[in-house]
Length: 609
Image 1 (tube, helix red, strand yellow):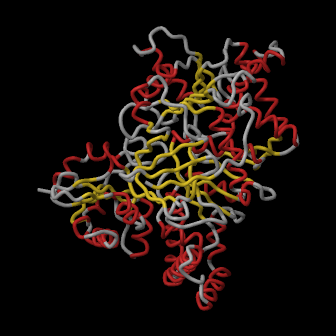
Image 2 (cartoon, helix red, strand yellow):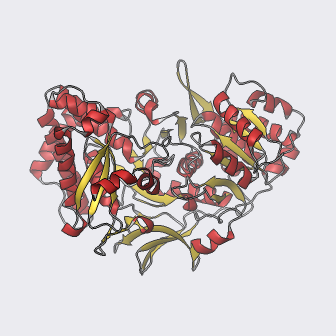
Image 3 (cartoon, helix red, strand yellow):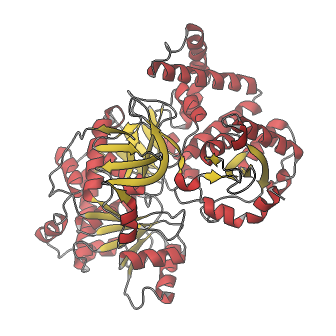
């Protein structure tokens, strides 16, 4: 058993809560642009004073409507400025925020409202208002409960944000302060429901202390990113996900100007105008940027040049990494010279894809390919990979600008201890670990051991305290021959290929390991263009010999990572897409392995017939 810890940097008054972070920023400089909102003529800064005034007005409206301290309030919306506004208004009124993913089904909404006890729901638009109304009309779980639905969009009919604020005009400042100051660090700030790779979502009780202590300590842990002059970032991950919420509170604590982007599809366009200095991303964004750059190079007849630039970037970063690990002297003269050339000719174009001002990117939510990490770092876009779960209020480990080992998820954040048990399971204790699962004592009894949260992930700690994720306990496959196989590394390697959207390794109880592979429509289009062949439809491509040969090459590369007994012997190409809507991905884009195996059982059986 090995463990690593990082000392707490900042302590907070036990009677304080998340709202004190906003009041602290207001005391420093009420004119500082704490948020930016996209309008028809570009981005408009939102000073702290303006944001606070709106938060106070909405909080008074909630109090006037009968919200008592500790009451739960649901929010069902995509990522937008109003989400943040409502979140802080709930906290100022003494309430507990219950995020609901905008992609949630009626049954999921029903369960969350029932389990959380939320009787007020903020919704983004008419479609979500209609969904919630349908749930209320037909639900047996909710019975005759009266649930108030408030629209967040500007053109929504009452009740909406404007009418809510108006209703609170008679609430005094002293009454608001009584509500705002009721909660301390130990009290629940949010019930965040796990996105549910298996079973019903469980409500994680995230406290004010979890959010506030993680935020204030992360600022001191990553000063190069969060305290740089003019720091600004764009949030596009769903705010229903704890990672996005935690980072948003971090930004508030640091005074970082934060903008909101509705979706990943809109991200690249908004990056060009917002020009963030750092960015929180998921691996799929890196994959798409790389594939797009490779495609543009191929169209311009510069495929070999791009391949050379890619190799130099990766080798340059690997040399830096070896030096950091004490296993080399860094990039040699020839490599530095080549890197210098590409840093003038090609890498700036890649940096421009992120807005041109990004000094660091932080990758989370799912594993990042080490090749991608090395490529972007070598191209001047350092990637700091971190690790966390809903139950740890997101980040419990992270690489830092001064302490980075590519392929690891970094060292414990301040106030956190990470332990690797004898069976390889990662255990976590510290400021981010949640209070427990809401109204679920059985789950709580199973979740903790010796005061540590059992993550269910497998990993290892090196002598410097850097954590490497090696798999997930429940995902381990055991072949008929008794061989344990971790599917994650194989899947990540296959997914590096331009043609591949997702790869799912199977073989539990089977004679050998196989894989389900689905194709990326955009990658397929670019690949066909580069191969100078007519565009293939997804169904057509799955039967195309050339496509299969290309994917076989990706499988062969993945097999180099493992022994023969663990290698993928066969695979099938699927013309189905794995999406949140199809039920095969969580809203944070994690694979729902059990759902894929269930829905594609016939294809899996075919691999072994």
